[in-house]
Structure formats: structure tokens, C-alpha cells
Length: 262
Image 1 (tube, rainbow, N blue to C red):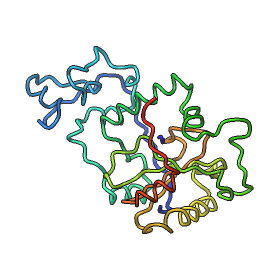
Image 2 (cartoon, rainbow, N blue to C red):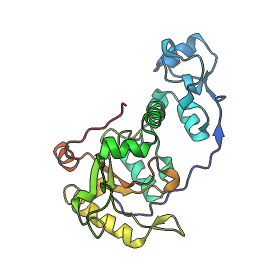
Image 3 (cartoon, rainbow, N blue to C red):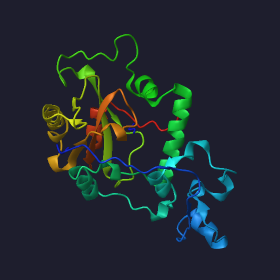
């Protein structure tokens, strides 16, 4: 899910914005959304937690799952969907190449739904990790999380490829997958980045699994560093494919479908 390829420097610069309360507002200037029509009749700016919400569904106060959001999220939540520009394949490649993974972002209304989804998962399962392990990976039972192979990528049971349940607001032809592993993806403690050996092993796996089945220039991969991860303790990295064959996706994910309801 992710929750929350090019072998490049995957370590992104974290967002250092501080948490903000519910004071940010937005003025709707386009007639292409429900909120813009409402704004035409009511010129008052909307608080971010009402943007992209039909007037009939407006809550009386900011929902708990939208409170105390970082400034980056509030800026995005304050944006009408009609004003959001999806990130193209070229832009996504540039983000990965320049190691600025924090620039990936969701459609504003998807971010709102994602935050609510995560809030519900934590209430029901205790943590996002519990949900992923139990409901998405099915790695449950004694020893289920113990790698069977002695080396990374040695045993197929130690790897599972699933859809990202909440992909970023990217071009429609881009498919976002997550490769989950039972073995450690070794980091350098001094840099919080993958070791050169681990990066090479991941890239070789991506070669065998993805680039051997579609044009290499349509495959990119990255691994979030700790500050950007939505799921900790279970190792994973991200793969994005540009216009892949649906039959290949069905094969590689074993028929997986995204799960965005709880």
C-alpha cells in the first residue's frame, strides 16, 4: 500500500514542515468543481477540510483524521482537484533521478481519503503494519516473517509484489507496485541510504523481474528512507511501470487488486 527501475540514489530529502492546525483556507477560482460553484455564490474562502467536499457533506468541524496535518498536506488538501496537475512519467522519472521522492504527491481528494483510511486502519488493527501483514501479505503464523532464503531474493516465498493501494497523483498510464520482502534491505547507518551492494542486488532483481519483460526506460524503482515510510518494520521498495501489459501485471502480482476500503 505505501502505502504508502532506475538504480539511482534513492535517499530523498524529508519534508521538514511543522504541524499546522485547521486555519489554512483556500479560495476557489475555477468553475470546474463543486466547490468552485459554491464559491461563486459564497465568496468566503473555505477551510482546507471542506475543499473538494460537496456542500451537503460538509462536516460541522474538522474531522479528527485531518487535524494537526503538516503544512505540505494542508497545502495539497486546500487545492481543488480541478486545479491539480497529475505528474507525468517524465516528471516522475526526474523526481527519482534527482532523489526528491518527497515531491511525489496524491490527488487532493485522494489524500483526504487516504488519511481517513489510515486513521481507520490504526483504529481497527492497531497499526498500518498489522493491517499490511494480516490482510495484504498474509504473512501470519509462527515464523511467517522469517526469510527462507539465506540471501536476498534467493527464495520466491520471501517476496511479494502488490499494487500500491493509494498511488500518487500521477499520469494514468503509470502503475505503482510495491515489492515486499522478508529479508532486510541493508542500509548504511551513516547515510540512512541503501548500501551499494544492496542497491546492486535490488537492481539485478528489477532487471530479472521487470526489465526483462518490458522496455527498461519504462521501469523505475526507489526505496523510501525512514522518514517517508508509511509502513515500518516490513521491508519494501517501490516500482513504477509506464504503460505495462495488463496480462504481465496480473501475472507478476498473482492477480492482486488494490485495497482501499476497510
